[in-house]
Length: 145
Ligand code: DQA
Image (tube, rainbow, N blue to C red; front, side):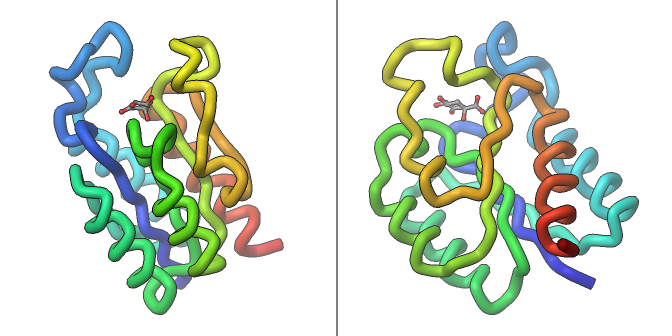
């Protein structure tokens, strides 16, 4: 069974209470449960991880190379700043689906730029927690085709 890493970056541990008008009331545990249910339906194994630290996220991406077939990544604000995360993804050569709860293109201009997008197979944003479900479906489709 193929395994997928679902990786969340800074401040996403606060989902549910963090700016609910932007990110909704769904908690990260709720997202994890949604992903577990969808993964079971798709016949995927999933590992869930979150860190507020750029270096820790990079190490999890490096480790994914030998453990996982792909990554669903919400890098939070590092999306818009981190060349190091972009390089880590390019280095491990795993398919990555970029996810954002909010529609980053409809928000402040500094959120329009993603350093993840050029090294991801695609980007899903604006669908709230359901975006993770869509990302798992997209990744599974890529893994079997
Ligand atoms: C986010 C969007 C980012 O711009 C922001 O910094 C986040 C969350 C999202 O899921 O909508 O932390 O990645």
